[in-house]
Image 1 (cartoon, rainbow, N blue to C red):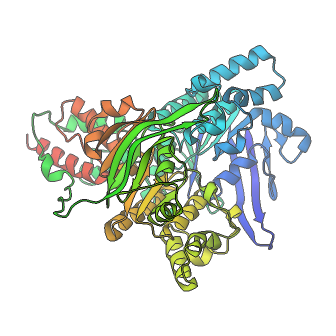
Image 2 (tube, rainbow, N blue to C red):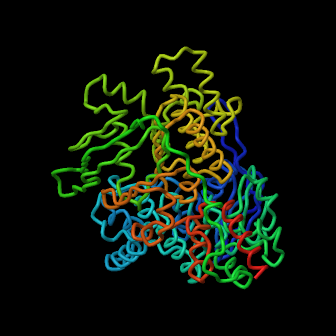
Image 3 (cartoon, rainbow, N blue to C red):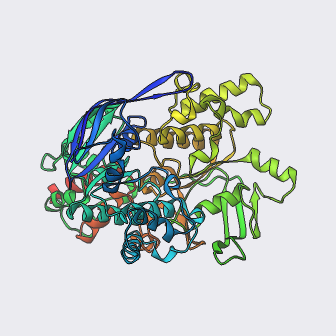
Length: 587
């Protein structure tokens, strides 16, 4: 087992500032357990994970793996052969020039023979659906594909303990589901799985949950016990899984529905005996979201693309077409969800729209103006369109958080007083309080806090159009909710156009009204989000799934219950099911 005894860890900066990341952790993890580790950003999850294989050493206390002390440097080789880790940022552990060589790196260092290495590499890559890309250069992959490669590299070690730090946050929904199924299979085969996650739906599938708060263990037990106490969940900066929240809402009026249900399968078992099958029992029009009326004014286009094409490493044996003949238009004031499986071309499209990449052919239009390569066009583009990158570290380069957020406005020539006002507003907006974080070192931030800082730096520019590539990846549920509410407010109050690439369907449902789906570098769907989520077959064809509550509605319809198929939120689902249950009671 892994034994953690009185573990403290303190980070010290060059100016002698110290951060107590872990404060007296006592924890045992048995071989073969499936443990989810949850907590708000900065609660100590990643620090704890890096103690499990000796990447970090205790400031006080000790960590034992099968009786071996991580502080003994002579034992680290044996410890690391048993504990494999997938980092929060997959680029931190990719070292080779091809996918196949990278996955082989670990087994080669174990001294295995070439045949065994070959078997392990193929099995690991096939397990994460990356065998077809085994000859691709890792740095030319999407972030989600890199995440799959990092997981494959850990699997190829055949570890006894597998530690995954937010290893699903860049995967499309079906890819995430497949990885969780793989982890459950490994767990059944006796591998201990320690999954650090901000997805409460993923955490609910573990057999044990450990919740951290300010470097201490606040809860250690079964997920159902944790989620049966909504107040404690909220105090930790977390939230109930969508289905659990729905069940809790319904249980207040319908005592026969248990408040501790975690999955749509469980909730269906309780609902079906209480609901009457009928042809048309619910006024779906009254419950559907009211769509905004079209304006009499002429709609102005914020962004457009005509026949965009882009190829990575063109003219080489490793050439890969990322986008092919992509045309689209996004109206001013719209909120558009950009969806698609990993590697479909979402990030490439966003970088073309912001001028980070130049198309091989085709053109980009910003507010009706075709973007060329001239200085005036570049300046116009920079002032009009802002972007949050998928890897937040790519746009953080100052030493201190406040200086990094202020960098963009300073380059625009904004006066010092206005710069300070913008920085304070932007940092407070993303829940990095100005007074607390402005003098913090960037390197001291957690992964989620870095993403918030990067978003603050973009917001401080006050762009008219904002492109966001996985803006909530790495954020705890409370921070994710705050970011979404901030984006909604920017769109509603300031008319900012938003284009959001995301793999989290619940985020898409809360934010967007329109959807663009990419697959293999082409636009395959351009429709309202409500229409898209009402057609699960279309979603599954492109590696997507509807939000959990929408999936529950489809499950009920398949059982003959007439509920709307385009329910997108827990609030609407609660109203729909309360109405259906009331009608059923009168039958």
